[in-house]
Length: 240
Image 1: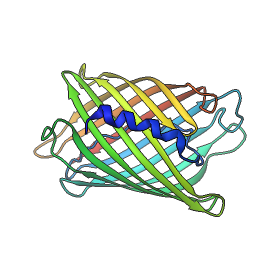
Image 2 (image 1 turned 45 degrees about the horizontal axis):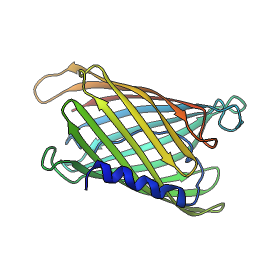
Image 3 (image 1 turned 30 degrees about the horizontal axis):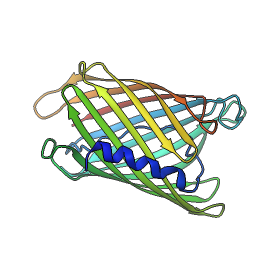
Image 4 (image 1 turned 135 degrees about the vertical axis):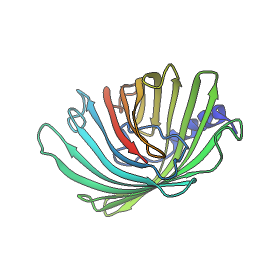
């Protein structure tokens, strides 16, 4: 199974029922794990939509700490907060996340992994569980990455399944700067746009290493249900 087949599976997404917050852009995950790496991450999205008051000016923030427990497993814990022009900054949810690297990098034509997530949404007394296939493939200086996931939500207000696709095509120009384009698709989201990615290595001694990773993107909504624009930010400090 290669990336072309993963993208083809996106055609199944419109047939699945809608869940809350599926019109928010997040990030595209790679399938790789670094044993012994500790990550401190902040990522955020800001949406603009003149036709939807709930989305216009919404900020959603993810704060997390993660650790590579082995050469195959990486765990992370998140606190998720939201802020709107009418409401103050509030903690909305907490999430546990585990990434499982299935294959060694370069072992096959594509590299594979899985992502498992469990989220508790506090105001609505809701739960979400997700399982996502992660795949990456290289063509020369290009890297294609796709995340194909299924989410199940249950609680007091709603329950059901959702499918989602996140995809990225990235040109490895240099470690400090890699231009990319990303696609997000779900029941009430279809968006595409440019992203800039980079890493700064801060040095270290012996087996220690420190680096900062950053991502900035602007995703444009294609359908009426999608936000008109979504600003995507991510900053990560990683060390061994």
